[in-house]
Amino acid sequence: MGNLKSLQTLDLFDCQFLGSIPASLENLTQITFLGLNGNHFSGKIPNVFDNLRNLISLHFSRNNFNGQIPPSIGNLTNLIVLDFSDNQLEGAIPTPLNSTFFFSVSHNKLSREISLLICKASSMQILDLSHNNFGGMLPHCLGNFNKHLSVLNLRINQFHGIIPQTFLKGNSIRTLDFNDLGNNKINDTFPHWLGALPKLQVLVLRSNHFYGHIGFSKIKSPFMSLRIIDLAHNDFKGDLPEMYLRSLKATMNIDEGNMTKEYIGDNNYQDSMMVTIKGTHPIIF
Image 1 (cartoon, rainbow, N blue to C red):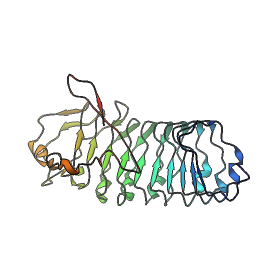
Image 2: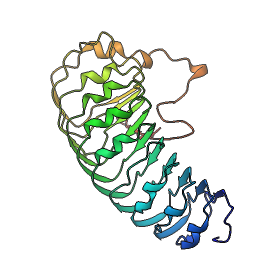
Image 3: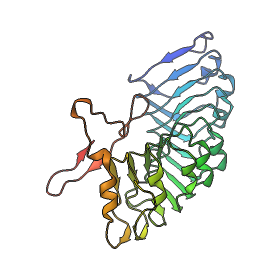
Image 4: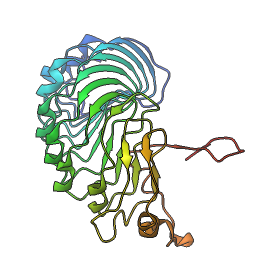
């Protein structure tokens, strides 16, 4: 592989390759697309990215990589897509660069607090840190890239504290997900202000430490685009205001001939959620 110095695209998606990545990968200095998704590669990812400065798209998901993410990833100034999901990676995450719009490290064993430097990724559209062991408070600067952010998935981690209201600085969020099945620790009252996000379609706050009365919103028609809301397993009390149910227009006006599931994802990102109907088996969407 190391002799292919002019190679620009290497796509090995969904094969049955085994073993570790050869260190000779560093010789592919002209490569822009590197796709190893869906194989059985294992071992540590070699720290070879200093020489791969032309990389635009990097896909290592659905393998058996372990150890830490190489720090030289942070030198890929042209990187737009990074997908390291579904591995056994540990430690901290590299800071996404300004050019990065897709960043997924979900389903790993990553930990520590999220650096404030992540908020410099001003082009971010999809950020998926779910199914890890990240902790600490949510950075208040998350609103810095809200102009473009459409998916923020932080489920099944150890985040605590409150949801920063800086999300109101932008209006492109489609999926805001703090679902963790008991593993996040967000301690806050109901975030009425999220109702002002006109594109928000999925809001999952289940299994945290939200508390108190939901109360009435000061927003005239909150959550107008919302299709799914999950508040289960929290400490809310009192009545559920009728105004919220009347506001959920997107769940009422459905054109079955032109029905899409944008809230599940698109060509760039797919997610799933479990819906349990009493007396039946769980359904995965």
